[in-house]
Image (cartoon, rainbow, N blue to C red; front, top):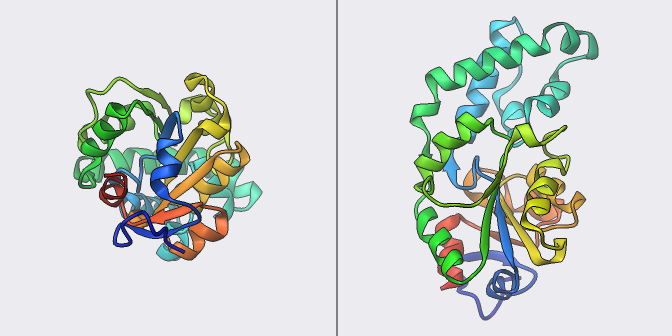
Length: 237
């Protein structure tokens, strides 16, 4: 149920007061795709087109449900072992090039992302990014979100042996922050973010702006669910 001390319009559901959660943290690790930038549909379309280019057809809705994972975890959902070994690398390379060519420049940040980061930094709460993206893509995403000039810890696909829902990316960020897991929160938009955070013993605030349902985020273990970064900022104010 929503906390009585946090604006109800901002918080969809929370096990405890969102202000208490965040102000009690030493740092917040943010997922990027679908959390800070509006990109989930673009990624889903790029994967659908990449599979189709290799003669493989899968429902867009099924692909979208897997967004938030890196290619190493997404492709095995759809491809058998032999196809994955024979064609997986080519499919992923095709998708990456396609995304950069047709979608990357269209990505936009969600409202109030910069204001949220400034608010947290002013409150003495460190911010970090934990993304499955490649470093060059992350640079574009930060600019779209208006946070490219901020000095903060960030981890990418290059820092993880396995992508979400494995915990590697968040564990790398946690190690660089130098804080205990109970001092750090994760903010993410997919059940895969929540699962990855849980495996690193991190609590997660879920965001609906990536298009995943409140139920899916809560079932995965999110301790609170809000609409988007602007709603989190409103709750903290």
